[in-house]
Structure formats: structure tokens, C-alpha cells
Length: 310
Image 1: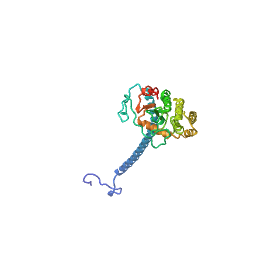
Image 2: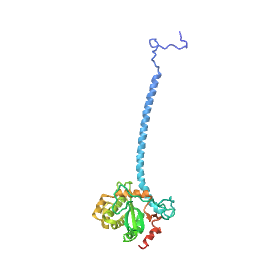
Image 3: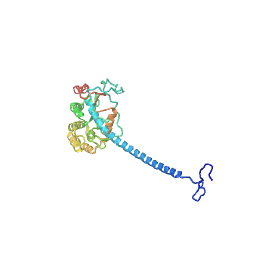
Image 4: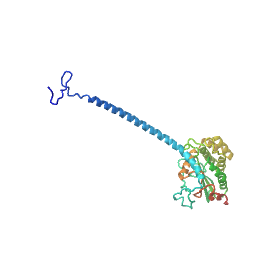
């Protein structure tokens, strides 16, 4: 006898009706789907972790590359500072410093120098990190930003720097030279750790002025420029070379011990950062009585300093 809908009744192997709890063959399929979803979730989680770790490695690597590029960009800036002086430079926005005196057209002016904090200053340096040489009652103040490995700075020293320094040292000269010794060419870290050749030379210069005064510093600074070889920046200015140059310039044993200890590398790092923060884009940068000159080699504001009687 058939049931009303024509389907045979459900029976067990003994012919009895199936229990009410029987779920049918679809449950196994659902369980399989759940297991598959679980494995898929595990896989997605693992992939997310791999992506996160990879991104972290990329960020760390990029940061290291950026630190390296800073030094390269700064070095390129030193070259472009001089080689592009015949082309017009972008005009700078007016500032309190740039309105103090008439400004050369198209020459970006530096902002006001600020005092260094958190580092030991050598005797003979002012609060901004400049090594000061000359008449404390001067009517003319020349600020220079140099790197001892910069070939254009070597040219500046030969043409003007040494002569200006010697004139400033004359009693009652009316001239004050403030030399900011930066270190970025060939350096691998903004903190100058480890110190490269530029940092070692600038630290040695600070040691000499600290222990032996501006006259010996002027002689030592000149000797550094004469010795520098821009084609071999990483290995030059070893402790032995710096000690020999300093001793020949008249430096004391205290100064050479300071050179060996690289005592003023943190000071040089702070001076370098302060220079770039002020707006220095290359070396040599020269400021005469608060006005940044357009071309350190041809501007009459510079050349006139050597022809004006003291």
C-alpha cells in the first residue's frame, strides 16, 4: 500500500522507521565545508602575517637607504651650489633676517642662526657652533659654512679664506670671521657615527681652537685644506695625519689627545644639523654682515674685504 504522495516509507535495515534524530547525508558535507573554511582562515591569517613582516622589512630597509641618501644629496648640493651660480636661483620668501639689509636678487637668504643645545662647545666657538676668529668689536662680520673635504672650499680657502682669517687676527682689524665647520661629505650618518674623514677633521679643528686658541686654529685649518684630497674621502684624515698637521701648526699635547679621542664629533654633528636647518644647501656658503652672497668667488662683497684698509 503506498503513502499519499507516492514515496515509500523510510525504514531501517530491520524495516522499522528511522529515528527522528537522523540528519541525513547532508551533515557530512556541511562538516567538510566547515573544515575547509577553517583551513582557509588559517591560510589567510598566515598570509597576512607574511605581508606584515615583509612590509616591516621594507620600511626598515627604506629608512636605512634614506639615511644614506641624505649624505649623497647633501654632497650633490655642495656641487650645485657653485656650478649653478650663473643661473638664476629661485626667489626666497621675505623674512625678518632678509629685510635687515638690501638683498641680492634671487639669492635665498639664511634664517637666523640659533644656539646649539645638549652638546659641549669648545672654547673659541660661539653658541651657534661657529669658531670665532678676529676683532670682538668688529664692524664687519663674515660667516662661512665649509666642509674640509669640499673641493670648492679648498678653492675658497686659497682665494679668500686664509687671507681673511689672517687679516681678522690683526689687532684692531675691524673684521670678525665665524667659521661653521660642517661634516657631511662621505659621512654615513647624520649623527656622524662612526665619524668619517670630514667629521674627524672638524672635530680636530675644534680641539685645536679649544686648547690653543684662534691663531693656531687658523694655521691648522689652512693645513687641513692643503692636505685634503677630494678623490679619496673615506680614508684620509686619520688620527696620525691630523696629529701631525696639528703639531706642525703649533698645537699642544692636550689638543692632540683631544683629537685622538674625537671629543668634538657630537659638537660637529650638532653644528652640521644647525647649518642645514638654517637653510645652508652647500659649501662654501658665505654671509657678509647678515647677507648671504650669491657667488662666494665673484661677489664684490667678498673680494672687497681684502682691498679695504683695516
